[in-house]
Every structure is written in structure tokens, then in C-alpha cells.
Image (cartoon, rainbow, N blue to C red; front, top):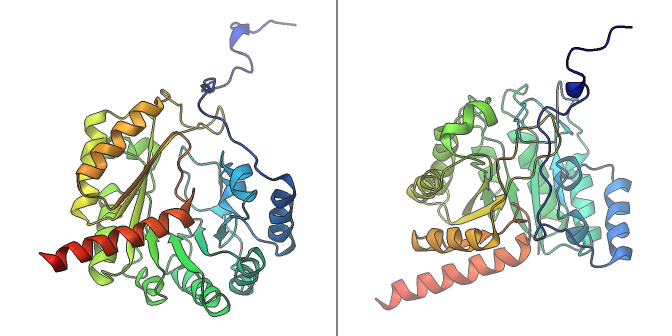
Length: 313
């Protein structure tokens, strides 16, 4: 039997995962509530980004009955290099999904819910009509629950995203994810300025809706590039920015370049606030929907303060 020429390379991961530093640790607060949340999600046959994207905060959030619902299936039509969600040909839409999500929100007794989705480039409207139905059904059966949507970019789908605005969610979130120079390798199916334009148009069309976007760091971006993204988002009048550490899901995903120290996240937060964002969440474990309910209350409070100050001037 002939030995391989480079035996040290056999079964070697493409991009070895770097050991996590001490400050990146998930926590579980209440085991009983965690499994109650899991049972409700499973019984209603729903997908969550918490599970599909392998979120590091799932134990903490589910211990507080907080779950982020991922609609339109668990198969995405895009293949972003950082994402753990499966890529392929999606299944047909579930017409009962709006009712299922609405029911789960009621069972979990959520004050605030985040609803996201996979990209559905296979659909003429990118799935915006289905998104709208989920939001409207959730509002109908949970009138006291505020709703945050985390949407795809609806690239080349015209103004189909306006259907979601017609449902009047409280927060419209679309993640910018990374800096422009990394888009071709990290988000090959997306376009940076299309995402900026989407957020800008949402704010122009519905000024009362909070707009939000998220950025991952540790993928090889420079500080100057991060600051430029902040400026671009402020030009689009985005209210809320989240900044979190990129965590490489597997050896086949985009390689993590480095871990940012918590002090660096604090510095980025202070810089972003100085640029005019109403709210900034910046920490190693920050994700789009992490502490979304508490953050929504802060957003409302700060906008009220802003309006009050403008009135007094």
C-alpha cells in the first residue's frame, strides 16, 4: 500500500478553529425553562435561528423563554461563508406557519419577538408576502407583543420588501454583516450598497419604525473599515447597531482571523454612539436578537428623550 505523499495533511481541517478565549462563554440560567422553550418550538414544528445558526446564546435566551423564529424553512438559497444555515433548494412554504408562529409567541408569553428568515431567491417576491402574513397573524393574536423583523436584502426583488412594512413591525432589522472589501468572499450573493439602500429606504418610507443593523468582527476587517460602515449606516439613518464577535461554525467556514478583546468592543460602542446611533450593543456575544426585548425598551426611551429635547429647543 502506497503511503500518501503528505500524511500530515490527511484529514486536516481546511480552516482550523481557534481556541475560544476565556471571555466567550455561554451560560444557562434555568434548565427547566430551557426545555420548556424547546418543547414549545418542537411541538409547533418551527425553526429558530438559535438552533440553525448555532447561536452561542441559545442556552441563556431559551432559559428566559426567548426564541428567534426563522420562517420559510431551514434551507437558504445563498451560501454565505460565515453562516451555519444549510444551503440548497428550499421546500415549499408552509401556509400554516403564520398561525404556528403566532401560537408559539402566545405560549411563550413574549413581550417582544424577533422573526427572521432564510433567503428565498427562488420566490418572485423573495418571500416578503409570507413574511407579512406571519407578522400580521402574530400581531392579531398577540396585540401586546412588539415585533422585530430581521429580513434578507430582497436583492433584485424590486420593492417587495414594502409588503413587510405594510404589516408595520416595530423594528426593521437587516444585517450588514461585514465590511465591503470582504463581501465577495464572505457574502458573494449579496451587495453591500444594496443593503445600505434597503435600510435607508425603509426609514424614508416608515420614519416611525426603528431601523437596526448588525456587524461581525474578527474576519480580517480593519478598524478604519468598521468606522466607515458606521458612517454608511448613519447616512442611512439607522437607529440601532449591534457589533459582535464572529465565531467560525466549522473548519469549512470562513476562517476566523482574531478574537476582539471586550475592551475593543467598548471602544467601538463609544465611537458608534458618538456618531449618532440611538443605541449600540457591542460585546463578544452580541447578536442581532440578543437581549432584543430589553433593547427595544431602551430604544423607545431614548427616542422619547430625543423628541422631548427637540421640543424644548
